[in-house]
Image (cartoon, rainbow, N blue to C red; front, side, top):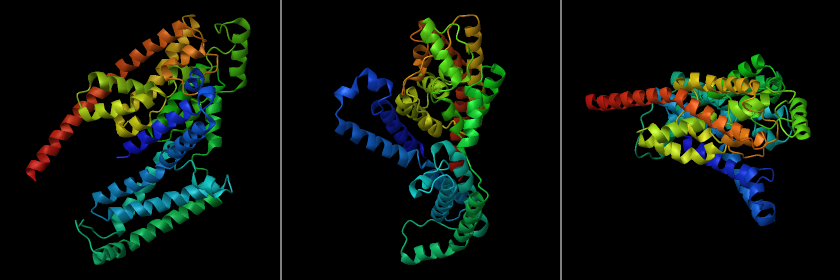
Length: 412
């Protein structure tokens, strides 16, 4: 249900990162610094940044609301009131969590808990609020037309579970504040990411990549998003300096640097799984609705915005995609490391501009090495072959669900 919100946010994020960012690939190729006036740039930057913030930035509010709504609906409780209570709880917890790192009200409210990269917590909060309405709320039957008396009666019946939910939220918020519990704290995430980005050892890089992708599949995307940002580590700078002095990156001191392997080959700039699935759906799927979702998200996915597809397909928390999501990036890294070891390709040592399509990161990161580009395409084809059985299994399950739904309606 939240796929439209995520897709709208991702489109505006692509606009912000690719069109209205001076350090982006498209901005520099099209020379927008001279062609685009300051007024247009300011308006575009404000609009795109604002839409990203009210969609992806507070996505957790929408998630908590619908999580509570659908949980309460299972037990025939008042869904609207459950959703409102969940919004109060998640927003209060996010506010107190953010206060520990900022005294600014606005910055505290836009905490990491509410971001689309932290939706697992919002799902859990909404679910528990829905369960509170399950045990303490009165049964509710939806009426097509409601007058003031029926609405007042609904509100009165929902007072007890709403109060219990708010009190539970107060307790959780105070625990977060007084005990300095940093949910999704950037310090721990940076520690995890830093150990991978600076490592030149595959037995460190590959397991941490798998852990980060597991978190992403589970609704915690911060470790992965941090891994895919540009690394200014000493090892990365040493590789770049060597490549600049010698004219190529074949013998850089850190050939298997974690940040380079993840960005160029492991996740290909956040498009590995999402773009692979999009291509498979467009080529082999016979489900018109799924095809429409893939077509709608093709552009943002190509430029590193998989959230719309991940929510709408869905990929996040979908058991069908758990194994491929966790293992495909690791397989890509191991194969790429082997190719680097036998000098089939060169390491990615040069900085890549923001908004570069994931398929081209290895090409630009190797200073235009066509072998690296061809190798990336071959890896992408391999990823398609690995993911294809999961999609076919998903189509089979979907057909069985449709048949079951039709039979249930017939029996009713």
